[in-house]
Figure 1 (tube, helix red, strand yellow):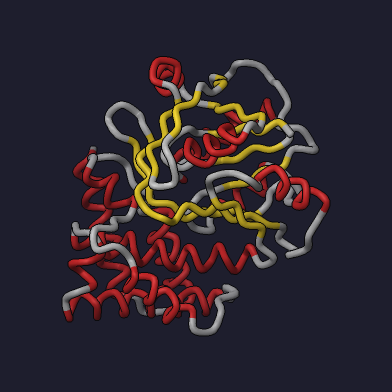
Figure 2 (cartoon, helix red, strand yellow):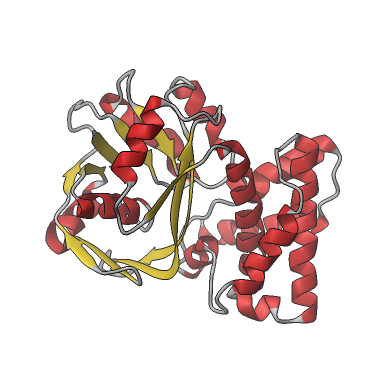
Length: 305
């Protein structure tokens, strides 16, 4: 199968690179700056799971209409509208779209642009970043990409994808409950990104103070209640499970949002915290800490202008 990865950053570059390392037919659709960087440096992955330098095939936006069997969309939400137009020439009716964006709001836009049958559910957990040379630095044991049919069934294409995704140095997991998995990820990433960005700190110092831990638990409860009122398929005990993840996280772990703030880059405040606030307001759920975090993030964005 021919795989197109939209974006060769810390997420798409990592998972696409692991597939390329295995020997799969992978092409990266990137902007000119990243294209030149990959041409000069190669796709460099420095990881606790093994380092590798690859020479990837790249395409620039507008460079033809070559068809692909699978498109993995690994970008930030604020680039989604542009990305859908960029990738459209490479998509056919048989192409499978696997988005790795955070949150949930993007699903409606994707399924409006393509058919719901083309778009699978997808998410990933990975702690990675790009250094000044464009090398991917992956620094923890967690590097999982999860995908699956919305119906939860094992279809012929999921079996084919499972074969392609197997045998790599990354973890590719086929899920029978992808919608629930995506809401669970949304819950976790909203809390982690929100609290670390508000405190401008890695999770350890927040977690290991009495009031900090209380704020984490309060934010979990506000987000959980909002999602539950929206009808999200959250599992019983999910907050307790995710608090254990927080407790077991490395002291120095930072959210990608905090890393973006430290680099003075755009963030996904509207897509993550903002979308939940809209739901909470519509549903009549009180979310004072979530509202404070969102306002804090919007002030940061205002100062970027």
